[in-house]
Amino acid sequence: MSIQVQTTIPRLNEPAPEFEAKTTHGPKKLSDYKGRWLVLFSHPSDFTPVCTTEFMAFAKAHDEFRALNCELLGLSIDSVFSHLAWINSIKEKFGVEIPFPIIEDLSMEVAHAYGMIQPGASDTSAVRTTFLIDPEGVLRAMVYYPMSNGRSIDEFLRLLKAMQTSDEHKVATPEGWKPGDDVIVPPPATAEAATERMQSQQYDCVDWYFCTKPFPNGNSNSSGGARRMETVK
Image (cartoon, rainbow, N blue to C red; front, side):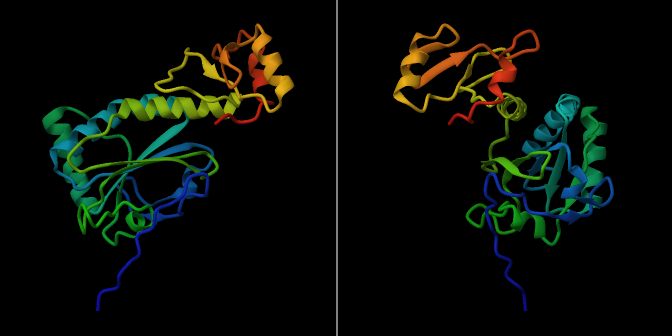
């Protein structure tokens, strides 16, 4: 008799589900990535064209992720042998080497724990999910894509940089933010502070609740003060 495994959706700002799995780089578990960011992403199946474009894009951006103290880890329901054959095909046919491990999840244990299996899309394939997990093992972001459309790897790089900036400087980032753009500071908590904020030359304020400032950098004193601010929403 088959056992039905409950698919759950993990929650942001809580510990990401622990796992231990066989991969193309040997056994891996979530705790192996302690102290580093991790992008864990699933794909429906090996030897599929959309997934192939995504893997090549992740591979080409691998060094940039590494420079941001971030590792990549792929997953599909296929076996390690299928993964290895696909990796070799990508190298032979496209000249791109895949430098990161891919999880074998034949039991679908990891896929179910992370909500990668969506019955409305497929009973046996993981949809395109992407999870950003911080150095403490906390799930910070997750994005779901349909099987028919590939992800933008540049967006995950952008999001990673934005979250790292928010963590370090206690600021928020506006739509489409990239390093060098202005950041958003927390709104004031009192009427007096709101009045002072509008009169301040430190920020560029459109209204009392919406103020920005230049992106903190090593040449300014703003980074130290920003760390004492509350996180803005």
